[in-house]
Length: 251
Image 1: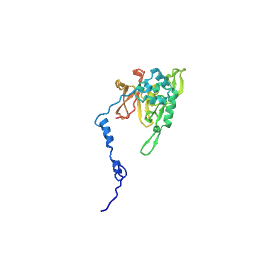
Image 2: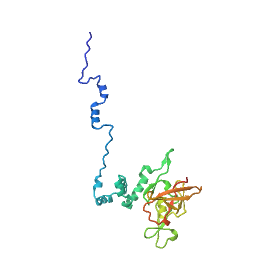
Image 3: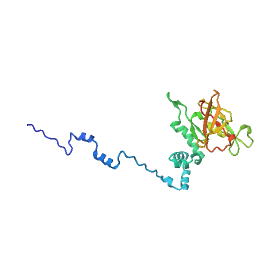
Image 4: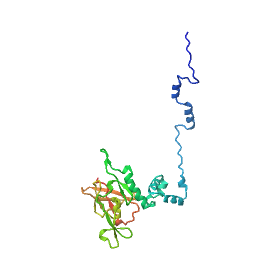
């Protein structure tokens, strides 16, 4: 008879230790199953107000007044409450908006031009009227460099300019801002930086209260019909003075 010594290394043998380590822990599973069954739906927790939302409205406005344009934009995208109460274009100063839009077009990578073979695209440009960085299709190739303005800062056509009006240099502005300000006259032909031909028009049809915009229909050169809906915000001009612009190719 041969006697072979048994290997004993505590409560768990060395030979079976790796195998037992790979086994699931039944005690943990049993504990989890007894406390939170997997087949039960998860309880939705109610959203609690943040500390900033709990402050009085006067205190919130005081805090908002000390934020720059970029911080106001980020805050307006946090939740619905701040989206309703924070209006970055109205609350920010002109200097803050000017600095941010210039820095965004220059330093933010998403606005840079791409020279890759599979992804060639021009860089985005900044508009110093609405203070947004937009794609090149929203900018005119032959943009006006100067314009007449009255003492109240309103645009005056060159034919109607008087001695009290001043000729002022213009910074870059998008086509939408040029149409709203009257810098693009009706029936003008506009060539975008992407080579798209646009025409301004006066034929407007309201889309409805939910859309909050105006629908424009105009005949193009082909001559097919294209329409474009421009979302308007606090458009104070009368119906016969409103101007819109086609921004899409013909269908």
